[in-house]
Every structure is written in C-alpha cells, then in structure tokens.
Length: 240
Image 1 (cartoon, rainbow, N blue to C red):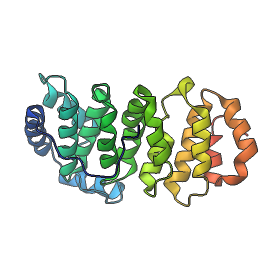
Image 2 (image 1 turned 90 degrees about the horizontal axis):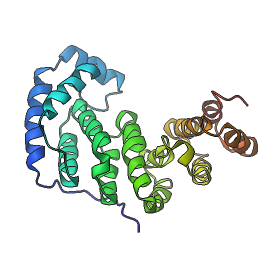
Image 3 (image 1 turned 135 degrees about the vertical axis):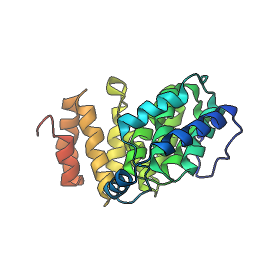
C-alpha cells in the first residue's frame, strides 16, 4: 500500500525534541561565524542563511548536544526533523539529516511522508541527496512495498522528488533492483534540468561498481535517449 503524500505533517509532542532543540540552538548559535556564514550562503546559491559553523566543528557540537539522550522513537525523529527544518539556518537542517541517517531504523514506512516534506522544503542537493540515499533508501529497503511510492515519485513534477527516486538505491550495491533503476533512468531521460541529468549518470555510475557490464549494455542500447552529461557520468569509471 502506498503511504506517500504531498501534505504537511504536524509536529508531534516530544520531550526529547524539546531537550535536543534547546541544547542545539544554544550551542550552534554560540559557534556562529558571520563571515563564514556569508561565504557558505554564497556557495550554496543563497538557498538558505547559514550560521557559519564548519562541518567538523558542527558534528563535534552535535555529539555534545546528543550526549546522554535516549534513543528516539518515530515521533521523536519526526519532531526533531520538522522542528530543525522550521529554523532558517542550514546547519540545523544538516543536524536533522545526520540524526535521521543515524536513526532511520527506528522509523516505520509511515515516516516516508515526513521525508517527502523535508525533500520539498528548502530543497537543494546538500540535503536532498543524503535524505535520498540514506533515509528514503533505508525505508524502502526495510519495506519493499514502498517501491510503489518510488514508482510514483519518479514521475513527480517536483524535480527533487524525482531525483530522490533515482538516487534512493544508491547504496544498495548487489541488492539494487536494476530493472527498476534502468526504467527510472529512461523515465526521466528527456528531463531538461541539470540535477536530474546528473542524478541519472550518478546512479548508473554507482551501480556500475557492482555490475559494469549491465550498465554498459544498457547504455549501448539506450544512450541515444540520454543527455551527454548523463552518459559521461555513468561511464566515468568503466569506459564506453
């Protein structure tokens, strides 16, 4: 049964989220660096404001924030992610992504609409790609029935939702459903946007590490349907 949707999930009550957000905003806020923030915002094409906390320092602060906290349940994961996304600075979104990557195994198939909400809010590759490969991919691996949702997502008008469908098997290796992977690439082969064309090449290149002959054979048959960028990316490590 399909569980995905385009609606908005309400933030559930969570004592753990209260604790985490209080610590998080205090510690990240104290480490803010306006000069670094301006540079980061420019690099990320002004998608969101930044605090200016470099990744190594941010992750060290995150470990301190989470020290002594219990393992979350699904409601805690939902509350922490959505409340982080309500904050404007991008580092809070990164915290949420890292948290979900760590605890995706605590979430059921019903968490997929939450990930869609994150993917379609303040959308850019820096959060979408990690959510796709580590969170959506983990949910689908745990419940193959969610492939029905991926079949819908690959046809979605939102390019970030379609990109997620392309990338959700990125870490599956020998467990990749190659038939579905190739079908998704063909479904979006004519897409004009760079981020879709790049994602096609990326997911094929990644699968080529597991089965290079399958990728070569697929492109030998179908390369005329793909943008040169997609083909270049797909064959980068295996040749024509």
